[in-house]
Image 1 (tube, helix red, strand yellow):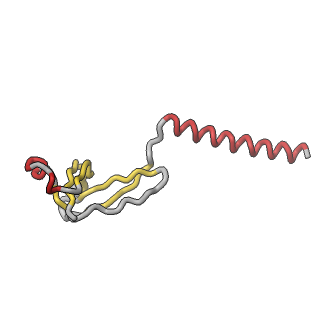
Image 2 (tube, rainbow, N blue to C red):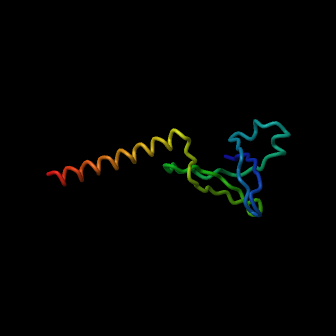
Length: 101
């Protein structure tokens, strides 16, 4: 089933897909003119800690997905620090028990 995409140029031969519509027949005439019609989008994999970005090559019509590190918000960063500190504390307690025992 065809998909209508809109892109922004990243570099020569590589455009980021910024939006897509799975029912291009429902688009207005102006939206259709501003879009590129492709056969289908690639399946995105779920990769922990990564975000999928889709790209399009206007020269050959190739569509692909790239994965980059997900930017963490402050809460996620703090949770990671707390988890690491808990792990360190457990290891220190284990070392103390071995020394005292």
